[in-house]
Length: 326
Ligand SMILES: NC(=O)c1ccc[n+]([C@@H]2O[C@H](COP(=O)([O-])OP(=O)(O)OC[C@H]3O[C@@H](n4cnc5c(N)ncnc54)[C@H](OP(=O)(O)O)[C@@H]3O)[C@@H](O)[C@H]2O)c1
View 1: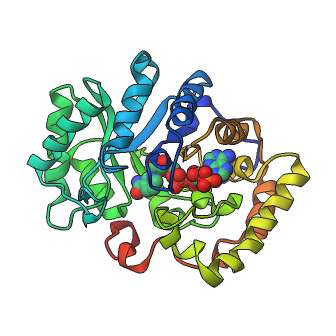
View 2: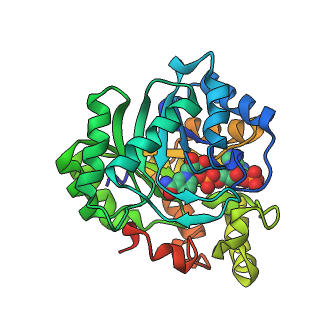
């Protein structure tokens, strides 16, 4: 993976907007502000809008559909499918990627989004009961029929990337990547470089851990994330403080610096930032103008060493289901 020794220039489209936090995943969100944030992102040159059909059980797609009603042509839509949820929001299954289910999920997503196609369609996780070839084959049928433009993956490992790419070209792999979640650098980055696949990096702010955000209550998914809880949270405050000090010294914010770091690590990295207010969006987009040198990167990585973070990036039970962790 590229380790720049010179300055890095960023392009507008290299920051994407992730909308999960607008639909009950991180506690309450303000709908009018969510829509204003999506509009502001498009106005400021962000093109890729990321969602999942299970974010708020369809709520997130309906919200995006409303936001894009008169400006569909300005956005590229990336949609994840497959997690199973009950009417009360309970998680009923990690992933359903049977070919018929894939086509069924997309049919409903198109209606909720109010569009005739999505730009990138991807299984949110690997379904261990279905060969990846069958899942990608089903999405490839949807590409042929014009309902999907490109195929993506999410939280899978190198072997699955290779198998999927052999069936149909893969546009990007979505995976958690941040100063404190650097796992993909070892085995994932080289495969993506080899195959020419982009990496849409989520959790670049470690879900707000790096910017000092805290879970809003029991309905906030972060309340169950190891890095946000108990003694781990207290220990991680030292990393938050270190990043804040470096950002202040540079006259910028921790969010902008953390995002710029991810972009500087490789031209393939497209941060999917989970801003849910215009203020957060403005703050995040400052990263586009930050030029980080190799020395800057080294200083950041020394101040916020990945192995210093306390707690795993998901609870153990969830990590067990993740192909990317094998
Ligand atoms: N493929 C997958 O498995 C997967 C998993 C998770 C997410 N995703 C996608 O990735 C997107 C981003 O994930 P994420 O929201 O967890 O990651 P994130 O960008 O690391 O965290 C976003 C959170 O950080 C806090 N924050 C503070 N300052 C911010 C700023 N300037 N800009 C943005 N956020 C700021 C906010 O929390 P407060 O508002 O509470 O302060 C916000 O909700 C999601 O929306 C989703 O589309 C994909």
